[in-house]
Amino acid sequence: MCAMDREDALSLLRQYVHGDSLIKHGLATAAVMKATAEYLDEDAATWEIIGILHDIDFEQVGEDMERHGIEGERILLEHGVDAEIAAIVKRHNHMLFGSYESPVEIALQAADSVSGLIIACALVKGGNLTDVTPNTVKKKFKEKSFAAGCERDRIRSIEPLIDLPTYYRLAIDGLITIKNELGLA
Image 1 (cartoon, helix red, strand yellow):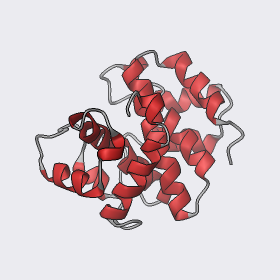
Image 2 (spheres, one colour; image 1 turned 90 degrees about the vertical axis):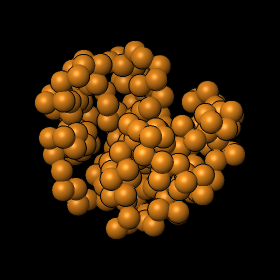
Image 3 (cartoon, helix red, strand yellow; image 1 turned 90 degrees about the horizontal axis):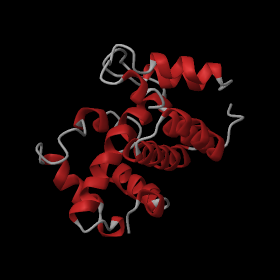
Image 4 (cartoon, one colour; image 1 turned 180 degrees about the vertical axis):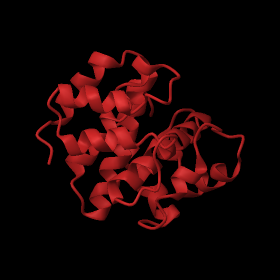
């Protein structure tokens, strides 16, 4: 499905996203997406591209969640990105869309939130991702005030595909593969 590679996706993302934290969020979401796709025997390269590009319009639309995703689809189509990828980016805005049924859309919902939760866990461990375990994530998941922006219901949406302890492990492992890009140990 995907004619674009990781470097092309990052280059396109950097045309529209300039904030370091948002670029790292795209990278982190992509790493979790890739690991999830590998586990589910799906197209890991395409899922990684979707993760990288899912918030390409976020700086452009600011706080306007009525436009987030819709502008992303437009940008991607203008740059010749596959229409199926662009549609997934559009629909990932759970405030406008919902009832996700395809594995890739479910995985994007979960990865978008779990990546932030795991990184927050690493930060309280001195920035060391390798010190984060599924039990660490499980414990912090229950603390609603910890990484409050990470929506637990979106993470739980992965459960029809993968049990949470397994998902936490593969998400941690995916993030470890790019820990240097994230500025973590």
